Structure formats: structure tokens, C-alpha cells
Amino acid sequence: MTDTLPDDDDLLAAEYVLGLADAPARATAEARVKRDPQFAAAVAAWENRLGGLNDGYDDAPAPNLLPQIEARLFPVARLPKRGWFRLAAGAAVAAALAVAVVVTQAPTPPAVLATLTGAGLTYEVRSDGQRLQITRVAGTAAPAGQVHELWIIAPGAAPVALGLLGDAPLDVTYPTPPAGWVMAVSVEPSGGSTTGTPTGPVILTAEIGL
Amino acid sequence: MSDDPVSDLLTRVAAQDRAAFRELYAAASSKLMGVLLRMLRERAEAEDALQEVFTRVWLRAGRFDGAKGRGMTWLIAVTRNLALDRLRARTETQADEDAAEAIVDPTPTAERRMIALGEAGRIIECFDQLDPARADAVRGAYLSGLSYADLAARHAVPLNTMRTWLRRSLVSLRECLDK
Image (cartoon, rainbow over all chains, first blue to last red; front, top):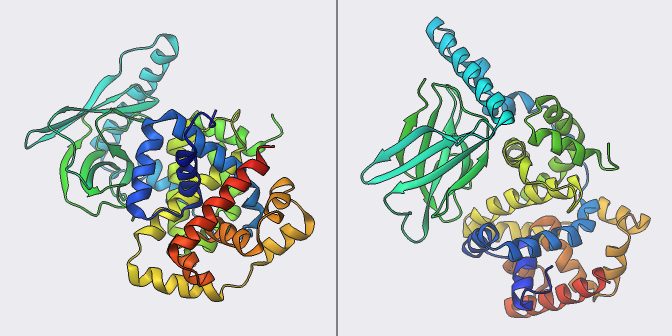
């Protein structure tokens, strides 16, 4: 229920949903949505209340961008056609399927898929086949005003943002990436990159192994 | 199947169903493109943003809860958030130009149609209870992504006055919509 939230906070949620806040205030509100369930519920309530205005948006024919979108999300078909690489990818897919089967039978502790480490900072990436969990196991979060952002890069494809890395582990719904894919962490302004690609320095990278 | 086909598709997308993802693109892309064009006002950027929206939808569909709202409402919320992030990241100069453009922006046909047909039901009634200029400011913020500064310029009032208008309007709307 949102009426347990102080009135000012509920109006903050409304202003966030309307989009009235400037970039720093948006970033603050976004961070709060993630850690404060009451505030998140207030935001959802305003999204539903104002959803009645959605009829005010005209339909506009969209070109078929599915090929580009699928190439970003499922780039397996774009792997280099070298024999060993295809074999490795096949093995990874098989491994992913095997993990998925095990998961439906009994929950297994997520396996460490990759470790991103350097200059006293380490993130561990775990996967259970359905989701990725990224935890900082050494070092500190980005300095004030900045944030670490996690990216996944399929061979030959553009980086795709997976989320912002704070103090709590990041949970992302994402299948186990096949071998040869690269995970990277960049330093971005608070709120993360707004361009869809890393804008700050890439400080950590790791290739998914076999 | 429920009475919300988009919600059903999102549930399947959350289970990594690629066929459902394609159906969702066919069902929702023109509405979401309409949202992006209205807010970003540039076709190339809107098309780029649409790719990012569907990428996020695939990755985040698991967070959608059909018990808490309709599928299209959730999709539009994801789309508006991305558009707002991009709008607020534009430089000050661009923001000024956007505000200037927004001043001459005529009321789009869909809004008139919505008002004429009463498609949105209760929200129309609640907006009718507001002062017309304030109702227009709330709609401008929601539909076009105008900031407090944009709205203050558009309505030629000081920023703090606009903030007071909006906050009072939101309190009235909440009271009316929650009845």
C-alpha cells in the first residue's frame, strides 16, 4: 500500500513517473526503486494511475528491427565460422541445457561463470542457467557521482548493458552466455550510460571460458 | 489465456520463449514507436531506442507481474523511462531547443481522439476537474517528457510556480483516481 508512505515521498514517486526530475534526481529515484519496496510500490501505483493517458500516444509504424535486436540478444548465429569455435559454442549450449535440466529437478547453487578482476577490484559472475548474479567480492563501489556498469558482448556484436553494480549483488534474468562471450565493467556517471554503449573507461573484462 | 494478450506474451518471454518475443514485437512495436517518436522527436534516435527497449524487455520480463497491472502499461513504463533518461542526458542547449519546439507543438490528434471518445474513462473525468492549463502541464510532462523547466517556459510561469501547480494537480489526481 502506498498510503503508508509520507505524502512528500509519494509525490516524489509521481514526479519520477511523470519524468519531471532532472538527471541527478532521476538517478536518486531509480536507486531508491531498487532498494525501497514501498517506494517501488508507489512508483508502480502512479504508473497504473497515469497509464490512462497512454491512449494519448499515436501508433507509429515501426520498421522491423527484430533482426538487429535478436543479433544483440542471441548472437550465436553470428559466431565466426571456424570449426573449433563452433564446436566450443555447441559444447557451451549443451552445457547450458544440461544446467537448465538440473535446475528444474533440484535447485543447484549458482556456479561461478566468470571473475572480473584487476587493480584491487573483483566481481564474481554466477549463473544458474536462468539468471546471472554479480557480486563484488573485493574492492569498493565507484566513487560518488559514478557507478560501475556491467556489459555483455557477444562476438562481433555491440555491448549490451546488463545493469548497474552497487553494494548489493546484481540479479539479471539472462541465460548462461556461451564461451567466447565477454563481460565487461565500465565506469559511468550515476544512473549509468544513457547512450546504450559504454561512455566511460572499461576497467574490467573477462571472457567466458569453456 | 487472460483478457490481456500482452501480459500473456510477457509471461512467456520471461520463460525465454523467443517465438513469444517475436509476437510481442509484432503486437507492441508500433505503440512503443509512437511513444518514442513523441518523446524523442527524432526518428533515427527513436529507432535506436526501440531496439534498446526490446533488449530491456527480454532481459527484464521476469520483473513483470500480471497481477499488478496490464502488460502494455508495463511496456510503456519501460519505454518512457528509457526515453526520459535520454532526454535528461541531452545538453542544456538541446534542452532549450526542445522547450522552444515544445511551445509550438500542436496538440496531437490522438489526444483529441481520446478526449472525444472518452477511451481513457476515469482519467478524463479527473483531468476535467483540474484547471485546464494545469491539466495540460501534467499531460505535457507525461506524454512529451517535458521537464519542470520546459513546462515553465511553455506556460510562461516561474519554475517554482510550475512546481506548485504540478504538485497540487498530482494530489488532486491521486484523490480522484483512487476513489
